[in-house]
Image (cartoon, rainbow, N blue to C red; front, side, top):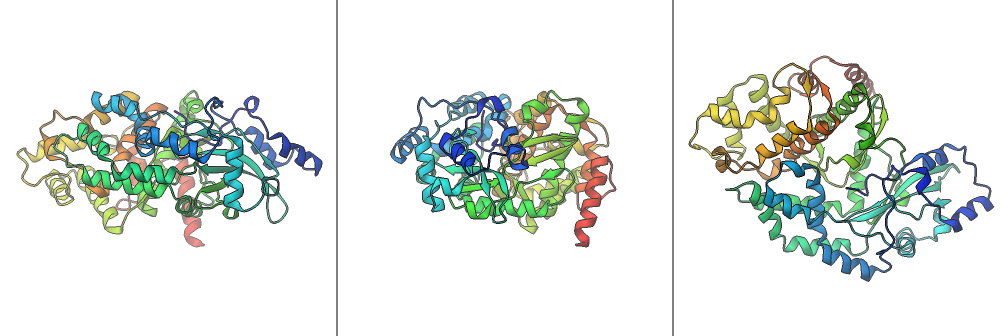
Length: 464
């Protein structure tokens, strides 16, 4: 499945320039392909050639198309697509109907939206603009371009353009989103899904505001600035609005390409993603709620660029302390009595549910298995699928008394989304030792070369 966030990935043989702007660039002497901006522009690769058969030429057509596709529900289908194999059959069938993509906007409509939002003609805004979108999906589409910075330099950028009317279409979906609860009930037999539905609705509404996404991305970019293997593209403020988001364009390899790399390279890629997720959670108190293969660009030797900061969950100090206490009880102390009290207080398990603490521990321990012991963990897709199946197992007696409180909805995606990605990479490593470096309650010494590099970065960061 394509994602508009996979915008740095296009093949040189399959892109076409906007001929008018290309001629303009040549006319004013900007056709120097040796510049770094143009190298990025050329080397960024597209996943697919989008069909123009059904292109949307007007805002009215966009609104009609989105109304037929049910934008919010399609977004939910995209979010769950990579968990497909482990889901219960009714939920899998339902979600499979929600994963179709919107056709791209016409070139004229894209230009119209950009000129209206940014307040200038295309010829003034961009040195070069690729009219073929990198990808199109439920909320908008992304194009690559070259701009001139205030100091006169060329810069390659990714320009995300929101469909006109998509906010209204999704908001209408969310006001009558009973199907969300119906789908969730397939996976959690006794669950009252209202908290989960409310949390998903809140996050989806936030994702429509590109100003919020820009703020999220700016915070992550600032936090990870200078990191040895984690990179977050910078936001281009004067080219961004609530419906346009322009960021640094990055060239690199796709998730699918990385899957064919050597075991060592896949291990380092998996370690980078794992460290990013939990470093962000414990140090930054935020989680990127959409772990999807299209949201990463790989550069080898563990270096990864992270994309898509529209679906960010920010956690309170008390929530993070709750997560830490659960890990401490279940993994470090392995005190299941204590763990049961914690999850009952957190609302994850009904108090006095009719089964033993050992049975409860056995049920919930599946989520902690990769880090319970200091050993080499070999991730597989089969293992990741087993976690999804375990999560949505409606036959378990314990599952009838378990639920997912609102603050845990997107944390659960770590178990599902992150594990699925590591399984597809077939990554391996001692994830217990890595975790001990990341857990605030252990703060162990570095266990890998990447950990050593990160420790030095943290030291330098604290000195500033």
